[in-house]
Structure formats: structure tokens, C-alpha cells
Amino acid sequence: MNIQFKKGVLELCVFAILEDGDCYGYELVNKISKNITISEGTIYPLLRRLTKEGYFKTYLVESSEGPPRKYYKITPEGLVVYKNLKKQWFSFVEGVNNVIERGDDSE
Amino acid sequence: MSLKEVMTVNKKEFINVLRKGLSGLDKNERKDILLDYEIHFAEGIKQGKSEELICDDLGSPKEIGKLYKANIFIDEAGKNVSPNNIIKAIMASIGLGIANLVLVLGPFLGLLGVVIAILATSIAMVTSGVVIFVDVFIMPIDFIDLYVPWYLLYNPTISIFLAISLVMLGVSIFVLGILLCRVIYSLTVRYLEFNLKMIKGK
Image (tube, rainbow over all chains, first blue to last red; front, side, top):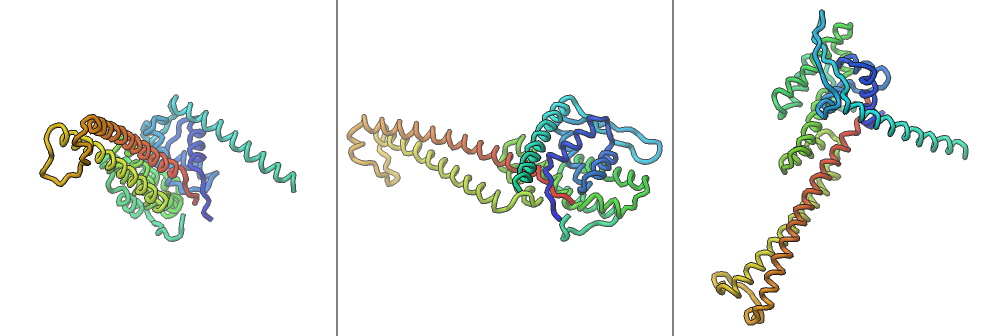
């Protein structure tokens, strides 16, 4: 199976998770891969790009045992983009649902 | 993940393949990217996952490296307009398999040909205008075999009108060509960005 997800959806997931609170990389990756089957390694490039675009900020937190954790925090600009993406997503889903339900009626 | 991709089984191998895949990027950026994965491994091991399982969940380091490259080169091409940057971005996209060779390179080269033809035409027009002006008004050009219709030589009004029109038309077409160049450039970058938004599920 070679399902193509639109990266926008993955972006939306990352935004949604970070809106709830700051996350470090591993934690964020796990939250997504728990729900969506995806190559986990592709989330880091996405995080990097969105950070470069100014939607996230990062800060390091030393952990008592193990490696330092790089936390991601959503910026005000990121929040604006997230709200917009979310709106687009819901109208898209609503549209698809309308089509599917109508298709069922006619059968 | 496509089956042909060789999967890595431990951290060292994963990092090595990724490092190779990131060649050509800025040294600090490369170090920073690799650090993200080093930390990911360390975190996973701490939580009791085996290196092999972590590798399996991460996916192909080769594909990940290509993804970074495409991301960074397309970004670069959008920010700093240069022929070199756009070619790097196109090559990275093709390498990633997100942009089909024929679909990107075909139209791109075709449009490039059109732009070059337009620019060449405009340069030829400006040159003709200048040559007519010089030949008729300043001095006959003898050192090259030039064909200037006889009626131009005896009718300065028509020749100056023709010379000025040619130059003006040539310059306008040149400007148009340059504008077209910019449009094609930004369209190409946008197309590559759009492609990058498609990712494959595992």
C-alpha cells in the first residue's frame, strides 16, 4: 500500500499538538505516529521547515538522565496559520462528507 | 516505504546513511539535523525500544536526507533567484521522486527555449535598428556584408523611423522576456513547493 497523505494534514496535526502545549521532538513524533501510520523520520524535516518559517520556536531543556530535549513552541504567527489551516480542513471534510452522503442516497 | 529501499538496522548505520544523504548542505545545518536523530535514538532507547525498531519506525534515512535537501534547496531557490539555485531545487525534487523528470524538466526546458528565443529576437531587433541608424546617418558600414535596402539609404525619414521603431520594439520585447523569465522562475518554485507537500505514507 502506498497511500499518499497530503503533507498539509501532517502539518495540521503538528500545529494542533503544539497548540495544546510545548512538546519535544520524540514526544511529538509519538503522538502523531500513534494515530497515523507514517515514517516517523519525515516529521523532523517538517518541524525544521516550519521553525525556519517562524511558526515555531525551539528551546533546549536538559533532562536529568538521557539527552537534552529540544522543545517546540508555537508562535503567534504559527497560531494564525493554524487557525486558517483548521478552517480549511473542516470545510474540506464537510465537502467530502456531503459528496459521500449524497452518493449513498442515490444508491 | 517502497520495498526497494534498503532499511537500516542500527543507529550508527542510520546516521551514516543520513549524513551521506545530506552532503552539499551547510556544515552546521547538517550537524543540527543529525543531532535531532541522535536525540531521537537516545530517547527511544531510554524508553526501551531497540535500535532496530527505532530505525524501522523512522523510515529510510536515504529518503529522509533527500527530503531535507529538497526542502532546503527549494527554499533557497525562492529566496535567492539564480539559475544555479533553481537547477539544484529541480534536481533535488527529481531525486526525491516527488517531481517527475519529464513533467518538470520538459516544460521547464521548453519555456526556457521560448524565453531565449524571445531575448535573442529582441537583441537582433535592437542591433538592426542601431546598424540602420549608423549606416544611413553616420557612416556606411563596409567591413561586413550588410544588406540595407537602397530606398532606406535615400530616404532618411523612413530609415530613422524604422531604426527607432526597431530599437523601441526590441527593448519592449526584451523587458517582456525578462518578465516572462521571472514568472517562469516563480511558477517553477511554486510547483516544486506544491510537490513537496505530497508525502508518502508508510
